[in-house]
Image (cartoon, rainbow, N blue to C red; front, side):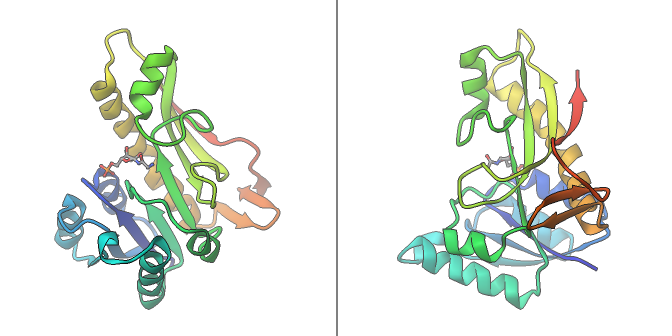
Length: 209
Ligand code: GAR
């Protein structure tokens, strides 16, 4: 059975969706860089081990990442799931977990990498918005996309309503992609990602109109 660690910094609604999905892999631990993250309570309620590794206590990014890396090794983790983890990871850490680490980002990548995605979508006047699950590479929000949830921006939407509508999609697609990895439907290879044994050329799309 695949062993999963989830990295969080905040509320952890995506962690909750992963817990509730009863994946065929096992979530063996949750790491937070913030001691006050509500995600830690969610993990404890589900009897999942937790570790608080505060970035502020380390002199630099590499030192912080080394401690996280060691914790993941101690838990014998096969898959790292970033779920609202708001730290940029060092190249060394990302290389060590290449093909074994996924992230969810609140935009239709490659559009709107980085922060404040909902407001930036509104500022541009885009009609479509959503979220993307992707492998993590050293370049921010740029690894191969596995799945996207797409919604239509309504005339009454603001950044708050968009955030909550995107969350609904996130809770749908993230557990699905995690399960695909756990059960071998999605396989990472050096030549590219396979979906049902075929090269995955485009992210799988989930639409909510
Ligand atoms: C999610 O919307 C996720 O896409 C975003 O943080 C939120 C976490 O919510 N992640 C990023 O912006 C990463 N760059 P949650 O803590 O309730 O799961």
